[in-house]
Length: 253
Image 1 (spheres, helix red, strand yellow):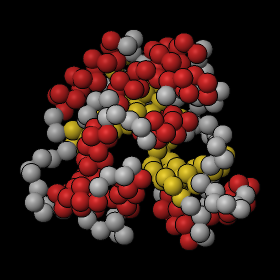
Image 2 (cartoon, helix red, strand yellow):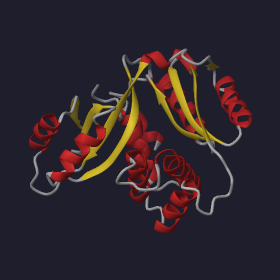
Image 3 (cartoon, helix red, strand yellow):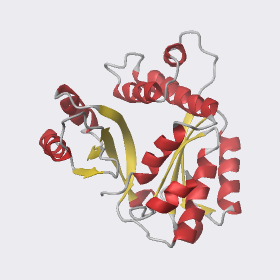
Image 4 (cartoon, one colour):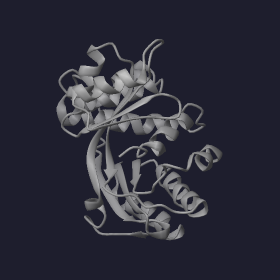
């Protein structure tokens, strides 16, 4: 599984200087609102909400915005807007599988926008289940070692905590893959040991990946960017192999 998270990693790096900050906050607000509506407004008892709030704080979203989103989802001072979770499936250029996760208050608008990008960029939108079987739900945790901490020691701690896979990125951060159900347990175990968990999320990992040449890889990633630029789209997953695409992705950033 190593290397699967490169796209999410570079997105986080790009996000730090992203001019579309307001759009990012809009997506975070929707996730917090839906999470609070689904499981209540207490992050301690609602793990999905806890992850959403953690990410919002990482992205420096103002605390009052976070609280307002929680209240809206909990039915306090809401604006009456209801968001629907919809996942679109299809193939990008050169047959790259894509899962597009959205939160929308208008499914007709969203499907039209998503289909337009698939069509314009050489892909095709498929039926439900057409590519979903190629992916597995997992948890993903990123740990930034503190001064004096060794990545190998962190790796052993993660394995002992129940990690399924552990890798170290080019910056020395440790990336931990867990089962979908085990994300909270592993994150809590690592945090309790004083490790600096900088990011935790649920994700979709491809069972197998597809390798393409640089030109085709960039074409597929440009399509992912276009999709994620849509207000209604939360994230896009692909089975594109990015293990050896460091230089290409750095140029895109």
